[in-house]
Length: 230
Ligand code: URA
Image 1: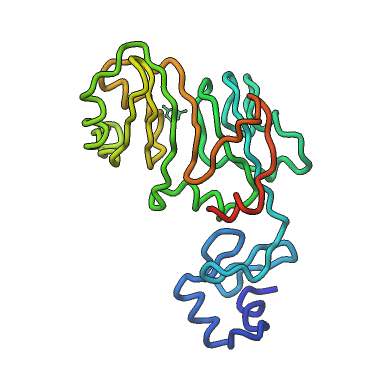
Image 2: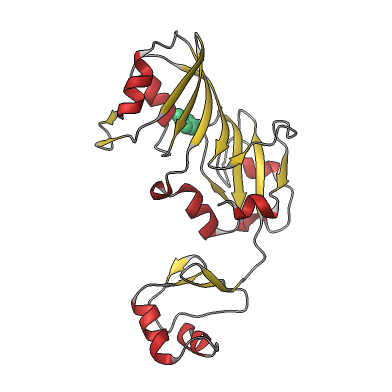
């Protein structure tokens, strides 16, 4: 059924309101804004107006995985095992990763079929802190924290990173909180000081914390409370 008809069949909107909602880009179909009144709503499409879900669509699924080292944050890879290989669920091809990690980075990884949920989690505008435990080759000097808090210029993207918070835990270990997810961001930040990151582990994404009961390679569904946090 056309999206304009679907909406005006609901008791809450008349046709004029539906035209306006579409023109004001307040309607989402399967997580994407639609303004075309002919867009097709199917039995399993998700329909949202503003942030209100009018049709749920397919059951949403959310998982937390403890990513081990040596696997790729991708759904497919010709050479290496992927994080999706660790998930044993039906309809795996519908799942995607919310916030990738490098091949040898470990820790919290979120996997879902819910596009609007993962967008809220990863889009830079929401500025959700991602917390990493870092071990480096050289000693971490006090000036790092200042530089990270100031923001760092990344010439390749021609941007300055948003302020990041560094807590030094030992001579070569620290906890770093960043609100973006630029390509190899943490390694490049330490790389500015010619200090190589030897181990990197994501502990948190916003309010979601890696479950300490999960061993590397294990996963579990998120609870309803955890899903609602995002
Ligand atoms: N920053 C990195 O450099 N690597 C990751 O895997 C995550 C953040």
